[in-house]
Amino acid sequence: MRTSRIPGFYKLSVDERLERVKEFAGLTDEEVELLRRTGALEIEQANRMVENVVGTTELPLGIATNFLINGRDYLVPMAIEEPSVIAAASNAAKMARERGGFQAESTDPIMIGQIQLLGVRDPYKAEEVILSNKEEIIKIANEQDPLLAKLGGGARDVEVRILDSPAGRMIVVHLLVDTRDAMGANIVNTMVEAVSPFIERIAGGDAHFRIVSNLATRRLARARAVFAKEAIGGEEVVDGILQGYAFAVADPYRCATHNKGVMNGVVAVALATGNDSRALEAGAHAYAARSGRYQPLTRWEKNEDGDLVGEIELPVAVGIIGGATGAHPVAKVSLKILGVKTARELGEVMAAVGLAQNFAAMRAIAVEGIQRGHMKLHARNIAAMVGARGETIDRVAEQLVREGRIRADRAKEILEELQRRG
Ligand code: MEV
Image (cartoon, rainbow, N blue to C red; front, side):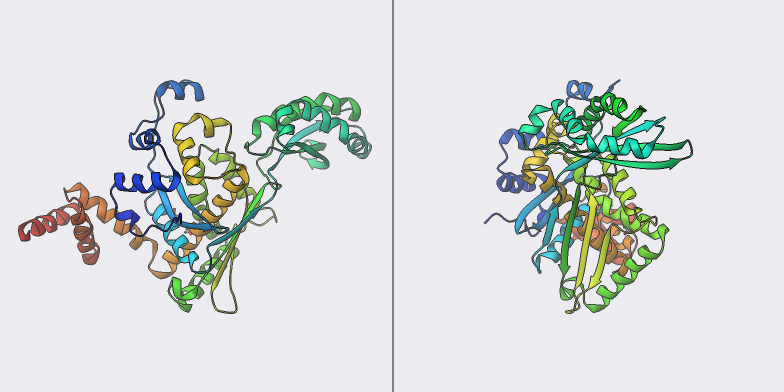
């Protein structure tokens, strides 16, 4: 059985980890080599991706273990500069396994394209005429991308909104497009530009802004998990987390940090897979404020057994084809490790990782304060910095944490002491 439950993964060397990932995901030797060597993105590839290229920059790519989502095991590649995030996700996913891991679902991958219509004399009449020409608008949109329609995607619907703005009344037309496995911003932008002349003609206004919306409320992913109280440290921990959650519900200052914790996970998966993290961030925070009050992206409660139940819902405008997902060599390997077959599945994994991350952050803060968790890794880094290798890193780090003094001079002393004792 292929399992993502790999105890002690963090203790393995990079090569040993790669071996396990290779086995799990069926990577080729070349793919392993690509991950192993830094600078996998060649300068010429980079030069084709963006403008004015002078170099590339790198982030560590780690693997979150233990994820069981809809009964399937996933190893989750995460690209991030922040320590503790990948360990926290793996740990939360391990705790969730006891009650079956994560249950996730998603809507169809529908993006919204917006057309701002100015100078319309009778907005209600225009609304009526646009809606009665829906079929024609959809037809023009779908002529822009016949392949997408063949793959089961394409423009699906048209909506009209009448808005009062600081510049007066305006009509906003929404084109709803099923972009299948692409993130879809390009497709949608092409379509809204293509249908605009027709809409101008029938509605009698000027199409001004024509652009995708990052508030992808029609492209949502949800995940749910039950954390058994015994698995997470007992009733007190459950209650402690719920108090912290209530803080986020009541206070936007806490809520921004709460949601930042969620996005630590979501964005790390996005960066690993070559997705647009800004689009995800914009969508997530706007979605969190959709009621007019900025709220947590997750919901937490206690069930009748006293276990902690968490849910997340967020927009996930992500793709597994097109853009950097196909152009960046590491993104391609990351997608292979994940083994997701559709963009929807990728969104569901991201939702599960976001929920896990949020749980882990709240648990750490509730139980021991965030710094202690960070300390361990920091101590390991210091130990390695002063020359400790292999198991000695852990022994030096443990001593540093025990003493509560994470300093290089002390690490050196401890290392020398251990070396003297052999
Ligand atoms: C740090 O990157 C994220 C946290 O601040 C999230 C939270 O406070 O819930 C730990």
